[in-house]
Length: 255
Image 1: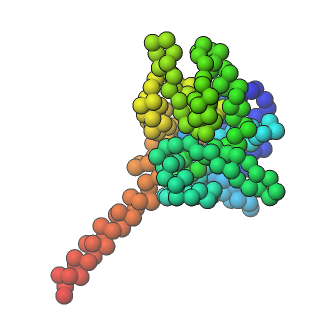
Image 2: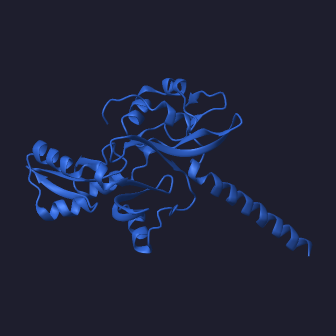
Image 3: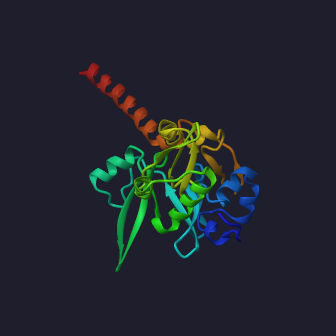
């Protein structure tokens, strides 16, 4: 992402103020400002009257088709949040880790978008196809890797499918990945390595970032969240079920 003023006004809407950004570890702050998808963070989001609600989410800075900077937020859900109204076939594909291309209607306009599931939050990420600037990325791959892509390969890439290429005696896999700042990824390795990389959780690759928490004192600190934020509620439900079973046994003995 090109260097430009930090959108403090957008960060403020989710409870991240200038002093909070400065207190973040530099590598984390730089990755967020460069457009990478953030780790799962618990943010104190202002809701008015000097109050806030603690919400676990991921954030990402992206450019829209007009080049304007936007801040996307992906809140955590127990089940896949189908807010984009994908059909059953599309849902099955994104659950498998595929990136799909789908047309959306907004008023009188129609937009083609890439859609990808973030499995840590169960939220659907999306990006307008036009913002990925696909042809430019392909030209860069052609130039840097000294390879030529066939029409079929380009069509597959444009539809969201990764493509494995032979570069000398090495294999390179390229494809759409909305977790990347530019929405496109070039990776050393074959298709199996691509799938493995797609399955890696952010916290496994960046130890200490999972559950990065903003405290009530408006400070930032590292915190490994017990049993992972996504499973907190299910853990509580399990404990409740155990308690219910014990209660049922007591009742059975008393009959």
